Amino acid sequence: MHDSTDLALHGNGMKRTLGVVDLTALGVAAIVGAGIFSTIGNAAASGGPAVSLLFVFTAVACGLSAMCYAEFASSIPISGSAYTYAYASFGELVAWIIGWDLIMEYAIGNIAVAISWSGYFIGLLEGFGWHIYAFLTTDYLTAYRGFHEAQALLQHGTAIQDLSPALGQAYQAWMTAPQLFNFRFIADIPAFMIVVAITWICYIGIRESKRANNLMVLLKIGVLILVIAAGAFYVDPAHWSPFAPNGLPGVLKGVSGVFFAYIGFDAISTTAEECKNPKRDLPRSMFYALLITTVLYVLVSLVLTGMVSYDQLGVADPLAFVFAKLHLAKLSGIIAVSAVVAMASVLLVFQLGQPRIWMSMSRDGLLPPRFAKLHPKYRTPGFSTIVTGVIVALPSLFMNLTEVTDLTSIGTLFAFILVSGGILILNPKGDKAGNRNGFVVPYLNSRYFIPPLLLFLAGLILFVGGGLPSFGLWFSGFSIHSIPYLLFAITTLVITALALVKSWSFIPVLGLLTNFYLMSELGITNWTRFGVWLVIGLLLYFSYGIFHSKLSEEKQVG
Image (cartoon, rainbow, N blue to C red):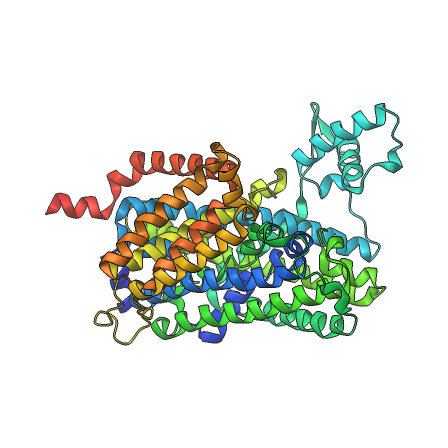
């Protein structure tokens, strides 16, 4: 950790080319992707027009975490994001856990993004009348499962033309794929190619990545403004009544999808060593990115739910669907192009972020030294970038990982919780002495803010009570599905008591508990998968990291 700080402060060869505009564009690029173009539809279908308020609530939760990220980024201006901050706060073991956890947000999450991009891209080509063989645009697992499901339907008398488009494509892919020794060559080539292209851009330099990203961000922001401006003329206020047709449970049902729409602002902090002025620009860019995207999300959600009834929005491409439904075909086509660009920019930001986290872990000895080596010409972590590309590109060829949305969300929330907790450990009372020229989370004494908040929540539970998903499970009897809520309740009691006794800063306390609540809403299945993933990470740490870490070497020398 000390070596990393020295490298950042005295020069490590990485090119410092990013200003506040570039960093804000990276944040917007990471945030505005699958969320605005797909998951917003399902969230609106469940919550109605009131989903716009859920975007505000989630933005506040992310904003609380962003303040904690901003203080860390300002006081520890080196690459590594939450990994680096956890190392400074909790020590090596927790830092390894969060570094391993971030692989879900960055690398594994990008597999799903690549597969989703492929779907949008193929749909765009088909809109122009260009068709690619199904076995070149479908992953193997989808084709295999779809073929057997379609075969069962066909045997029961269903006509092949009556199969759903997805089943029909899977069946066609399986039937037309070339074979060798009974193995069918079926792969999602577009998903593979976009990952290769994006990885190459990340490999050749941060300046090239910056230029490509800024162009893509300008395009998709322009298209979203066009959607809002054009859609406003087709809004029928009658569609906004009732505002919350399914009540609070319906609104909260979209928590996972809405939170997934905000994932990415923290990726800005992975580029700390390539910023011109990280202490000043990193905090500003995080807040700017959150503010811009929140305004866009709220306006888009209001326009969509005003143009058509909320219950028609549960589709994969709600923006294009709404404009096509109102016979605005040209706008629908523009949105399809923008969706392809938006997904590509998300890939770019996360393909930039993951290698830099590995670079920081390697500097601390937790990964082999080669992960920290910079390319002699491009001054990027070349080996880490290539490994990230391989880890994302190869699975995107053959696997269907769209279900990792929730897993990505739970991993990100865990990172947010630890970063908020890190502030409570290192600077629980907002002391500016150690970071005079940087950003410090504003100090609000928890003793004066927690009691009124508890009274408000007690009133909410009293009047809404069983309508809240969490409390509904308690009222219906304890089960294994109640475990996340039990852990949240215990954590809330402990943190609240400590905050009141020790007068902790209210903002990181609220950030920690808010993100823990969102995490508890993701269900026991995702918690189980998350636990298995962490166990695998711990096995790797105790088989390699603990024996090679710089911290262990320092202790032995001492």
